[in-house]
Image 1 (cartoon, rainbow, N blue to C red):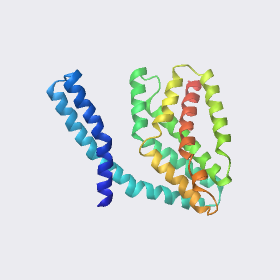
Image 2: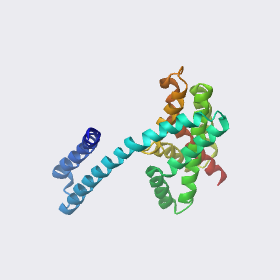
Image 3: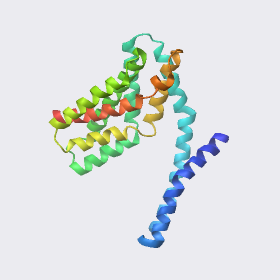
Image 4: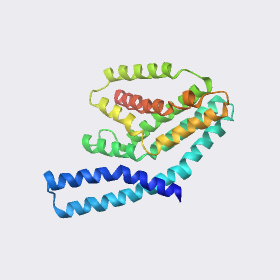
Length: 229
């Protein structure tokens, strides 16, 4: 019960300022029709209810299972199996990420279907999967994250020069949409689960950074897609 109350308060604190700003603008500047304001209010109430249920699901199920998977796959002992498991987890949670689907839909509408929605979603998911796998290898082998980030962003800048300039902002947005409410909690707990096996390691230095790496993958994937097309 305490968890439900805490989650409800978090959502209210997040949503209420938005509602207040809209109402202040409505009575000072906007003067929108009354039915539009009513629809907005109903929508925000439904949004709040949905967010409460969604966040409860994240806390009760997704966080626990992500950490457990991270701890269990490390016991495989085989770096290739661990990488494959990391890739599959990154791929699946990205395909399920609502923000990724919104980006794919908007891009499809704006470009008139230049790149299909499924193609873009799969490309982004592959990029996340590869870099989640790379991130797990980094944790296990204690590779400095700075080295991987420098090499990754060097590749990003190189591809940005080679690809059509219209694709570059799509690639950068692809990195942003993968930091959504499904992908981030799962990947974070996955990394912390892997670190939990190494008792002598620091969870602060090794467990974090996986989301940062995972967000580089889709940028590179979309830019490579632009080069190929």
